[in-house]
Image (tube, rainbow, N blue to C red):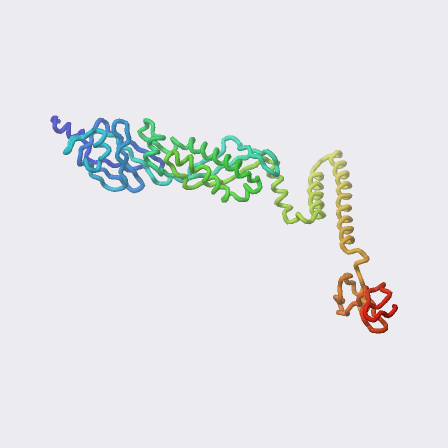
Length: 352
C-alpha cells in the first residue's frame, strides 16, 4: 500500500451508528486514530443526537438528518481549533451518539423497607416494587454528568443509581404527603403522580426525563395487613356494633375449635361460654336499644281498628281515622279550642 492510500484509509468519510441493542444510551464512535475529512457525511437517525467533542470540550451538536461536515456548520469546532478562512484539512474529534428514545420496563424495588409514620398504625415498615421509564432530555447535560471515559453507556450502567433516586423520592413523598397506609394502598395512581413530581428534579439534573413510574405492589407487615383486611371486611358493618360483636365472636369460636386435646377442649368450652355471654348481652342490648327508641309513653292505639301508632301521628296508619288532639278541649259555650288544664275560655271567658 502506497503512502497516499495509507493516508486516505485513515480519513473518515462517513460517520453513523446503527444500534443493535435495546439498552444503549450513549455510544462513542470508534476513531482508532483516524481523522475526519471536511466534507464527510454524518448520518443521525431518528431518536439520536450526535455530539462532537474536541480537546476534551463539548462542541457542535447535530439532530436527526444527513449532515455534510464543513466549516460553516462546525462553528464551535472552528472556534476551538482556530481554523483560518478556507480551512480544508482533516481534523481530530470524538463523536458520541446519544439515544433519545424511551427506555421502558426498567425494574425498581426497595432493597430495605421504608419506614413511615402512619396515623392509624403508628410507625410501620413497607416494601414496594414496580417499573419505570425514562429518556435523555438534554444530551449535552447527560454527557457532562454521566459520561466519564466509557466508550459505551447502557441502562445497566445507570440502573442502580436511578433506582436509589426513585426509592429516596418515594420515601420523601410518603413523609411529605403524610398519607396513611390505607390510603396509600387504595390510591396508588394518585400517589404515583405525586412521586413523579418529587423525583422529576433529580432526573432533570442528569439531563433525563422520568416518563413513567408504576408501583406494582406495596406490602405491609403481617400485623398491618391483618388489620387492613379486618377493616375492609367490617366496612359495611361500621354502624352495627351488634353485628360486629357477633362477627368477632364467630372468629374466636373458629380459632378455639382448632385447639386439639383435653386442654383445647377446656379452652373451647370456656370460650364458648364467654362468647355466649357476649352474644346474649349484645342481643339484649339491641332489644333494650329498640325499647329505648320507642318507650311506652310514645305509643297510642287507634280506637277504630286498634292499630299501634306513634304518639305524633294525626291519622291512623291502618284505617286513616283522625286522632283527637289530647292536649286541647272545647269550650261548652262558644266551641272554641281551649288548652287542656285551662280554667277559663280565652274567647268568651266562660268558666270551664
